[in-house]
Figure 1 (cartoon, rainbow, N blue to C red):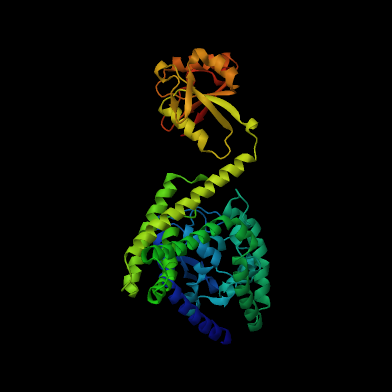
Figure 2 (spheres, rainbow, N blue to C red):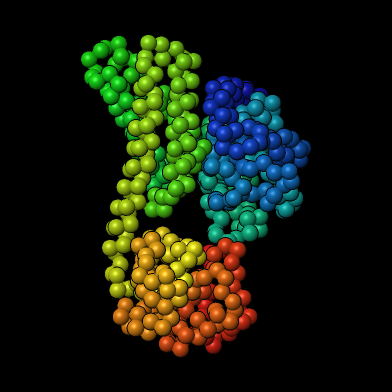
Length: 467
């Protein structure tokens, strides 16, 4: 009776916190992916009774069930927001509703999915004689079970053969020694482990780059709005305008950060910043600026404040975010490329100064510290001779190949032309291999090469494809 009273009191507090968090979490979940805010799943309760357990949705919504009931780290079904909710254990908060209804208790063995409960050995079925708990002894002692799965292992099989045999003795021991004092102890440990494990050193190390990027963006948001204020009013002399600036600064972060997360600002590698990332930054800053303007009018902060500040802030923030990312990419490329001597790179020629040759050049150049150094093009079209394609010179045709290879110390030839016949292709390969050069055939997406017209093993040729 006393345990049930504690469950009701604590679950009421939990439900109150749930109501306070619900608008923000629900908005982030809906922005992140399509589907309901809550996830309802069947679990085995006391006496083997099936009940509906509530969670915040952390996975993609599908018309049919995909994958096993367990979810290891890196599960592709988990959304970006879902990973955050799982890490903070916020996805479990709706289970306070189950505790209040009486389906669950605060401390007890974690509720099991029916398909996995069917594999419990007979001696372990005593676990279903008690109510499942919001926090369980095995969960507290082994938090973040999803991290226990080794790469490549079958999740369900590994759970049944390795993880479950470790959990069952702990839960059975808890049932045998159950007491109210022990429940309070586990409740305290659950809170402690959740807080400490959320900021675990390994987790911080794994996500340090994303966290630093987010911190830089937030600093840029504050600097940009302050700079916009200064550019518009020329000084900070007016106390009323300064108060308006201070009111706006917190909202610049609250309005922009969810939009930045939605536009995947922190899922890209700075070392591979592309036009796609620049486009997403432009869109994210524009939309978050509109959100900021809307919030300012809704809250009444924009009355008497210049609208030009928001436009200047949009322009400055876009430049700042794109600029420092591009700078980081340049520094990373320079530092990383200096760690490897240029002599380790293969000097190569590209045969074909056309569209596909340009694509091949761009592909070879875009890699950080590339293995290949493109010294020039070979093309039989005399009109292209001595011309440049993206800064790389067309050095000559097939008749100059021997001289060019000796002059530039070429190691390999990339063959890349769209509409050459199989006979022409074979002749080119024979010319290259006759000079002792290894060749690679570069084919872009939708440009398959008819390999049946030559024997790769005899001609020492390999195929290199974008598609």
